Amino acid sequence: MGWGKWRSRVSCGHPTARSVLLAMLLILTSLFYCLSGYSESAGRRAPAPPGLPATPPPRLSGDGSFGARELPQAIIIGVKKGGTRALLEFLRVHPDVRAAGAETHFFDRFYERGLDWYRSLMPRTLEGQITMEKTPSYFVTREAPRHVYAMNRLTKLIVVVRDPVTRAISDYTQTRTKSPGLPSFQNLAFKNITTGLIDTSWSAVHIGIYAKHLDNWLRYFPLSRFLFVSGERLVADPAGEMGRVQDFLGLKRVVTDKHFYFNQTKGFPCLKKPEGSSRPRCLGKSKGRTHPRIPPDALLRLREFYRPFNLKFYQMTGLNFGWD
Ligand SMILES: Nc1ncnc2c1ncn2[C@@H]1O[C@H](COP(=O)(O)OS(=O)(=O)O)[C@@H](OP(=O)(O)O)[C@H]1O
Image (cartoon, rainbow, N blue to C red; front, side, top):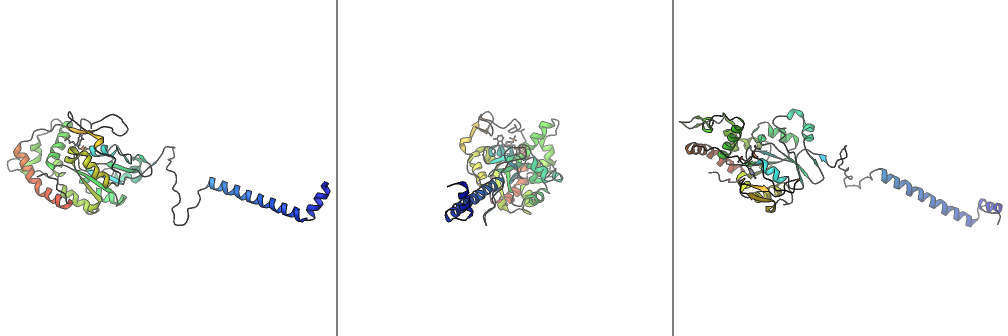
């Protein structure tokens, strides 16, 4: 069959030629849709099926590093000299915890700098990791609960508490390290040593009135939002206390007794493998200082002073810390 004849057959609409043409058209059309559909899904995110959230954007930051900085979901708010550094360092061993290393003091000193500034201090986190920070002065700062509430009323709050008498001596020991000429502990703790009148305006004494500070926080947060960690048990049984903390934070119990050993020289539990290191490490020299000897009658008077506040604190928290 010659070219002319073929052409005339096609143009004349011969049935065989028509079906061949139709088949070719169909193939071409489906090929076109296939190709255009492919390029669409490669270039754009497919819409989420009804009722399901759209695929979250990848947590890649502008500079290409992984994760995003988030505001903390949990904060160690106190207390100063309670064992807050130990707790944070123990938590950082957990792969799902990322924490700001230094105390940020956002809610007590730098609140006017705003939440974006605060967020910028946080480490990057991946999906499923929680962001934390510790600033022990929050617990005794009047405005702190209101500020934390304004950020997120569901923030989890951890308070490491320690016998207020030992805590006061620890606080004093730290101040004396920085100012060697400081008067004696009893000189500062008592308005009048003979009458035994306590100077509650001295911060080392004031911080230990836990019931009073907790009262201020309870104006904003229910008790269920708090976890009270015993500073004494954190030393005597770090793994046990860490179990409670991980449960409270909704974390798998990853940090266990396998992570700790008791360092006889330091007199404290230390980490076998701290975050980012494969070598054992204890906390620095500023943690676990030798305390000065305080006269027994001064200690006794101070214990008497704290007793009713401690009992109130046990009642408020439903926990007996055994300080009396
Ligand atoms: N594992 C371990 N290693 C060393 N120290 C430990 C540990 N666990 C708790 N502690 C106690 O922590 C006390 C210091 O508390 P903080 O970290 O809250 O102090 S601070 O407020 O941040 O300055 C610190 O107080 P001092 O003993 O008075 O120095 C320690 O008693």
